Amino acid sequence: MNPVLLKIIVLVGILLVVLGLASGLIWLERRLLALWQDRYGPNRVGPFGLLQVMADMIKIFFKEDWIPPFADKWVFVFAPSIVMITVLLTFAIIPFTSVIQITDMNVGILFFLGMSSLGVYSVVLGGWASNNKYSLLGGMRAASQMLSYEVFMGLSLMGTVMLAGSFSLRAIVEAQQHMWFVIPQFLGFVLFFIAGVAETRRLPFDLPEAESELVAGFHSEYSGMKFGMFFVGEYLGVILISALISVLFFGGWLGPVLPPVVWIILKTLFFICFFILLRAALPRPRFDQLMSWGWKWMLPLTLANLAVTGAVVVAMRR
Amino acid sequence: MWSVLRSLWLVLMHMFKPRFTVQYPDEKPYLAPRYRGRIILSRDPDGEERCVACHLCAIACPVDCISLQATEDEHGRRYPEWFRINFSRCIFCGLCEEACPTYAIQLTPDIEMGEYNRQNLVYEKENLLISGTGKYPGYNFWRVAGVKIKDKDKGEAEREAPPADLHTLMP
Ligand code: SF4
Ligand code: SF4
Image 1 (cartoon, each protein chain N blue to C red):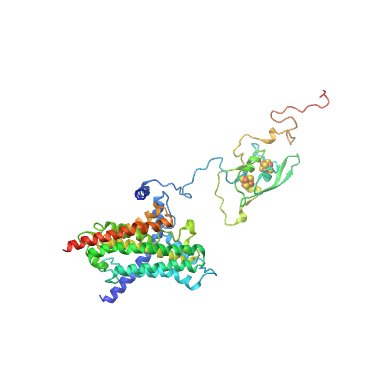
Image 2: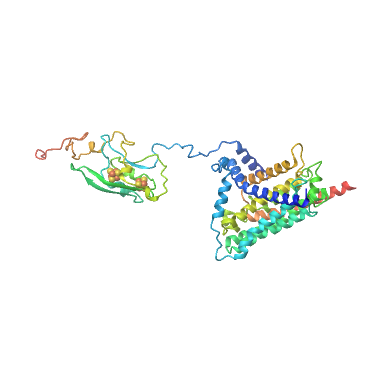
């Protein structure tokens, strides 16, 4: 087949699947949370309540799209789209299988790190443009959380990069033919997971929106589809981090018997469910605890992991 | 760290626990007979209206949602000409039932009173009055009260002594 046509099909396919999954996650999350809290969750609309997503979409599309008169209008409108753009762009480098990948960048991981740092502008600008104390606090929290967690997020990945000898995600998956990187890089996996949760601003690290103290943090003033974009952006982030974890530490599409695409979906879904479990089980820490945890524990641990991995890799090369 | 893992595990294990939700419209919850729901006006065992239009319920009501007009029949028996409860204001506190001297006004275990039109929540006497005695089957106010009505003179009520003859009542 014409390679350009194939690329376009893959691109549109990934876009549709990922967006569909993100809206499906709204349903999945509510049902799973309910399951773990001994409730039913949405089970009225359609089979198993699956059409709840449609009902929610219709509702959110028809809501009044309100821009507060005191807000900075252009930034206010632009902010929610940043998170969508950056997260969706990052999906371009994820190798779902050896065929289904939009582009195999040789600096894939760096691209991901760069995009995820850009993504935080969405929250910061959203909080700032809302011109509201709580939103601003939420935005500032997002910025400082990003600063402290981005550092060891990048560093925690360097272990895998050293083992695979490449920044390209496809090369990293192919280097896991014999052993998943979660075994030699277990610490790296745990650290990346924690940083990933902080990066997507999911519970227990959802301090930027902390509804019990900041109303809804950076999106207090948002309504209608602009709020929906923050919402879907968050779910897209969850899918992205889950997919990255399966690619970087759990052998991506590699696996016996089942076709590769099933493997990557299974692994990703597993981590998505784990994200939801975290939300169901853990309380939110205080903000200073979060920061000191990041700098005093996570960063030194990551550095130690990096040093040990580096030493072992060098020793093996000899 | 340990407590974090432990709570994750405990929450995960809730997957296998029964759910507490009662799936309401399909599965009706049990409401006790004394549940405070929709209000009715009952009749005495003879099939007459119990309410004597004393206004005590209307006075007791904290949200002033009962209104009625008292009148009398040709034998001097009081009854409400009209009786109106505005259920859109009623808080189902049951104070009217407690205030009523004749057990006429009673709360029932019916909670399904949803309406699209607010005006439909204003119940008139014909909507409130039932044909039975409600929760207090044997009670008949007029048979124990010392008031003269159609077929009962003074002194003929249950456990009532005949009226004293004032001319023979000497110190
Ligand atoms: S239940 Fe309470 S609020 Fe309702 S009519 Fe009786 S006294 Fe009034
Ligand atoms: S319902 Fe009871 S309290 Fe109310 S007016 Fe009638 S007799 Fe009196």
